[in-house]
Length: 424
Image 1 (cartoon, rainbow, N blue to C red):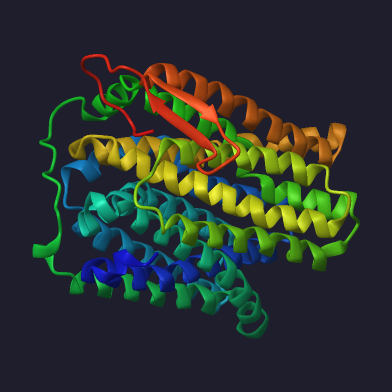
Image 2 (tube, one colour):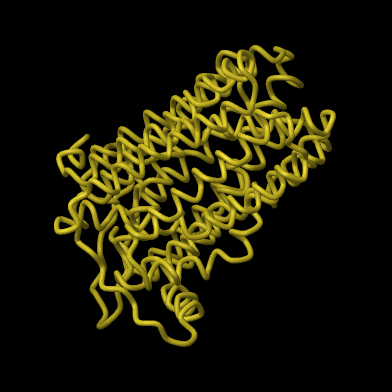
């Protein structure tokens, strides 16, 4: 489960990520609280701050991947992580001194989004340089576990600190947390990295990455599936709030109880994924399919206790899908295209969430939270089924469900000359 930690460079990186991820989630809570304080509780202001942080990824995400393919990923990460630390410190100083205004938060949020355009694909693709192809699935899963741990611990710590010392110092603590990542990057042994040869600078490199993905039917189909699963899956948090408040009438305390088990399930799912040797297409499809089915199960939950239980398993299924998908994309593309491909992957993975949020809200208002959750699950199941059939034809394999492990059996048909794709 933890075999990647035997590699010194990755061990340094992972230790820094555990600290930094917790700090990042602390800042997310502190930023939301600061915006609400400065705007008099405006939901529009809160939404605008979040939108500005994601806007650069939508506008410039493809160019970020091109830059990652051209330059040293370790060097880029040192620059981006330092920039994030400076931004957190700047906003922390303004908030601590009582000088922060809403527009300050907007500017810092947009600037952080600009840095993320390069940091996201650089961080994703640097993992394979530390651990190699063989241990990449394990390292990706451990990264996800670190992220989920931060998601559980960070907001809880932030809530206590904001109540005790205010939002400003929380930003400063997050700024200090980046020193753990920077220290790990500086202490690495460059000679032990499996550095990818940088892509030479040429005209049209960004569009070259787009054309590369479009030339791979397997990647296109997986991206289409991701769009629909993420559109509804990434907004499950909103649906949890609606179910807890409008269906089970449990109040704010129980809403917190409902949100935590899904994060714990995701953490468990990431650790389970870390035990697997290689990503398999069947895992990507099975995880996405199980997630959709469990959305339907949770929508029909007869009681709040059954609803919470379904959320735990849903978290495991979602993490099985995402960790397998991430590793599949990285291992099935040419190394010199990895940055551009992962920037497209991150653009799709993160970019559809704002689109899905109003759809989920409309369905809940028009037909009720159960219908919203159930429709999301049904759409996911339908899309995954269609994609599985098309992938089987594209990769010339036969897919057959089974009641015993593995629950999806894949058998290769006679191969045709040429072509490459993901493993079944």
